[in-house]
Amino acid sequence: MMSGPLMDRIDLHVDVPRLPPHALRDDAPRGESSAAVRARVVAARERQLSRAGRSNAHLDIALTHATCRLTEDDRRLLEHAIDALQLSARSMHRILRVARTIADLADSTAIATPHLAEAIGYRRLDRGR
Image 1 (tube, rainbow, N blue to C red):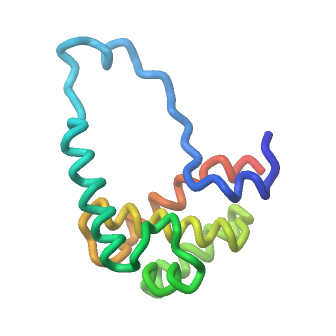
Image 2 (image 1 turned 135 degrees about the vertical axis):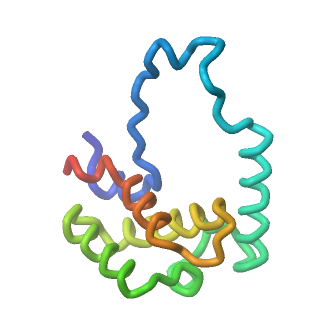
């Protein structure tokens, strides 16, 4: 198990389960194409650069607070997650930046509850501490 301070520095904690055999068949439904994903990523990055002059990953604390505004309900959700998962301030800022990135990928001008909930979910490995 990695230490808490090291885990704080990793933005996305994702467990990737093995695919069932039927999902590997030639006639299995295909996901989003790489070209479509690339187009969304390029557009999201352009939004980030035009908004803050840098990618969300490189926002300092002041820019994080300025660009990652939450509704009062979402602020309470984040505070509850921080308390329940015993997350650090560093983790909180990382969650905000990831939520902002998820919103950018969805072409959303604001962070919505689903964006924040998804970002909190990516701290999954923190739950084992």
